[in-house]
Image 1 (tube, one colour):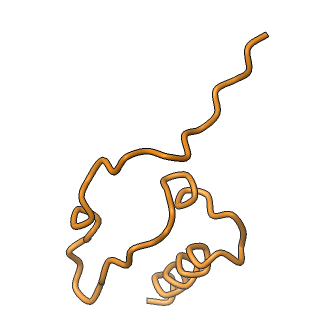
Image 2 (cartoon, rainbow, N blue to C red; image 1 turned 30 degrees about the horizontal axis):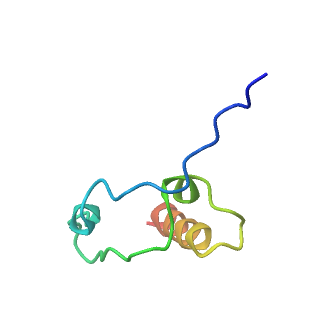
Length: 63
């Protein structure tokens, strides 16, 4: 029986870095050493991405 496909971990850049800039006031795009999968599902609650997202959500709820 064939093995199921595994997710791609390497993919050439499909868009340039400036396309990630949201253009929101007071926001700056910060380059991350992450891929699509690790951004969608951070590795743990200790990951920088997870902590940053949680902090941002807390700020949004508090506003």
